Image 1 (cartoon, rainbow, N blue to C red):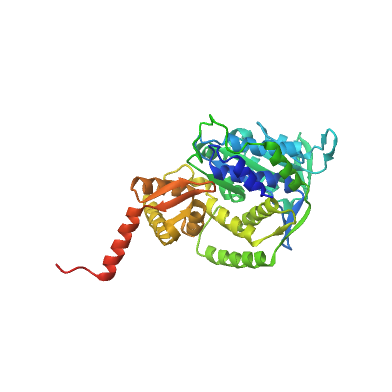
Image 2 (spheres, rainbow, N blue to C red):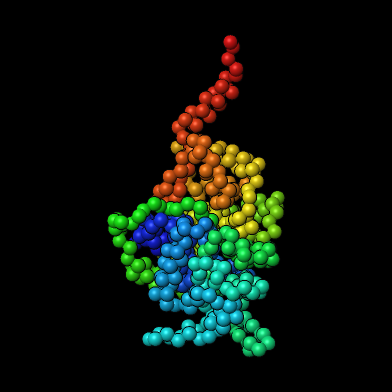
Length: 404
């Protein structure tokens, strides 16, 4: 049986929305239905697979479809509250604290919820405390009971709150909703920001897609995932791999400064995505080495500091990173790499989806590299002419100057 992610990507392969937005929306859907039921035991705390994910990009790139798809899937599975539209944080808390009755089903017994919005700046009525409250509720492992005592508002008690959130916005609008204190106060570190500036596919959709989009098939698969309960465990190989990677991550962080806290939470994001990957492929609650490797690959490449989403990028930084990109591509097999692998390999040097977008334009305009969409990712490849130029230069450098 194909994984849930494979089914989603196959059925939506001809949608124009960027592929990463579709993939991460599928992650969010699994997070929403599995979050309250499963966890990964880290001995001092138990980590839930709930996620906060934000799709960032200019208007018109197709944020609407992945947001609609995730919302429709979770709504049809009907195992958690789906909160959308325009809200105040007070009403969100009230909804989470209200026992939800469902026709023909038992009520939702705890404070689980899925927050979803196609334009995040409109989702929550502006309140300085809104993102601070969401930040606190994100940490499922530390909030078995959460109380909200406000004058004239009564007391809202949330029992075992478990929130998953999927939002979308343009960088400019998003920055209107997220203050500097939210960036440095923990909200940004808990949110995976997926920035794209190009469509994933160009298709007027006059003709039907090669594979029919049958949402009922996806709902059935997701419903099976929603029924799984219990604790995840690493396979022996996955545990060894994660431990080695984690120790190296902490050594690398000793020489970096990140006042958002995002770097310090990277391992938790990897665990959460690995749990979702595992559930997408199997229902045995075992995290395989394949799950961990893929989770590290996508998390290291795609998390972005929201403060950089709408400001100028330093030209000197871009120049250095472009040199790094060219060197990595030249040493790769076939002088080509998928975007995710390129980002992962150069994450430690500061490469992210936004500055790569600038580099991509320069590489194409200079005919240094080409970029092509595949079913899985955007692939960067050095042009034949540029490879020959590098090889000629290396040969001349090795042989020394010719005598006239």
